[in-house]
Amino acid sequence: MRQLISDKNKVIILVCLAMGTVVQLKNQINNSYFQLKNSVEEKLILVEEKIKLKLVSDVELVAKMTDYHLNTGGKRLRALLTLGSAKMCGYSKGTRDINLAACVELIHAATLMHDDVIDNGSIRRGKKTLNKVWDNHSSVLIGDYLLSRCFEMIVEDGNLEVLKLLSSTSSKIAQGEVLQLQHKGEVDMLEETYLKIISAKTAELFAAATKVGGVLSDKKTKEKEALEFYGRNLGLTFQIADDTLDYNSELKLFGKKIGQDFYEGKITLPIILLFQKAVNKEKEKVKNIFSKDSKDENEFNYILSLIKKYDIINECYQKAQHYINLASNSLSIFEDSEEKNILKNLTSFSLARNF
Image (cartoon, rainbow, N blue to C red; front, side):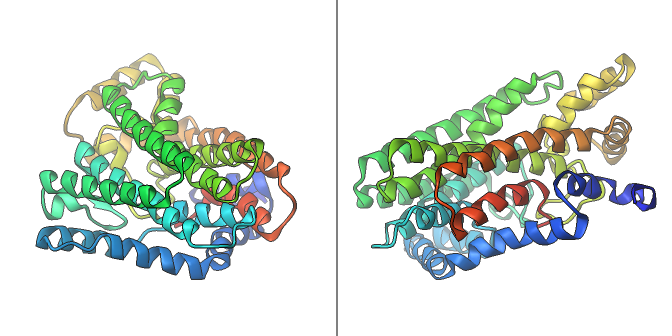
């Protein structure tokens, strides 16, 4: 079977072979996300309404920018994780899950706005970023506005544990941003440093989103810790996959154009692994490329050729598989249910999603 597969599809097949047959995996991955979405569909609609209501402003520019942001869409995965984990834990009374799902989405949106300013990003979810449509100053302030609205909602919730969790998460995300900025262009970055960055920037919010479900349901400490562990490892898998997609010339089915991380000078796992494997002459060229403020398409194609030469994409996915296993196994503490199975299958979606 492998001999019949072209190099063009090699990466997709390698991921599929690690988890099952090609057709079955594709269906399972996509279905796990939609199953979760369908299982909490009514509440997700209310989350969207809550976000829109909270972002209403009499200031014209605030209204325009928040409307633009809302129209860019998004998977709402973090909100889904809060709703899904709460449902798995038996939460059924009240609307706290809706309010806090909206909170985690607002935190996520705010960090994206700040991230785009720091990285001088131009495309997000297939559309121009706020900072490109308007300017950096306005984008930073709108991000701050979203965070302030979020914390209003947390105070309204009135739970001290939730307040500590989400405020701590916001602090760690900011520290992750600074750590990434500190190591910008550092091609010899340690893999350990990279994991610290993505753990803070991405995995912390995933962990908070899932743990909140346990807090709402008054679960015991060990169950809340299991949800937090699940979310953190899911987030690590998600970010590794996202960083790998950006250097995968065969997979262009995601919101940002391929090579965005490269042109912004971000050092991610594919570059770290590439630098470890490259010979001295290649290392010097890679280091020289990332030392420049401006990079061109020929340089990007050179990096892609080295990534293909050393089979870096496959190695990245193999490393991500480790976190998939950790996330999936952490749910064993919970009783079997439809929601548990969906969350368990979602770990594979985070690695091999195609949208």
